[in-house]
Image (cartoon, rainbow, N blue to C red; front, side):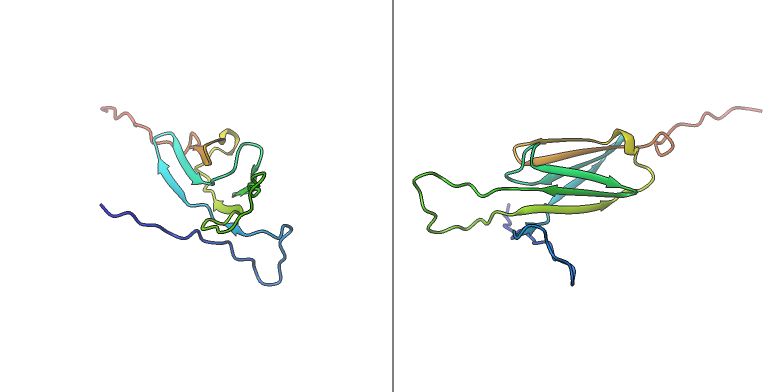
Length: 132
């Protein structure tokens, strides 16, 4: 089994746009699973908690923003760092199959879990066949 280490990918600022925070911003890596009842998104966002992540839904655009403050250890001076701290930003386009009123989000140990339930119209159902 091989272990693959990847660099975190930074968000690119569109030309002519300016960021409101002068910080590095990363695209959180995500795993997306589909269940019978909906879609589950697991996004890796080390350093965020329920107070530092914001999720907005406008029309069919779901936006995730997470803020991480660098840890300052009292009595220590950082000499070398292999891990850079920054904010997180990711955008998903939702289909009409998602019930927007029942979306749920939790965060634990830097992993954001979004539960996107399917709308009743989008769920698979069995259709009974009758004899004539």
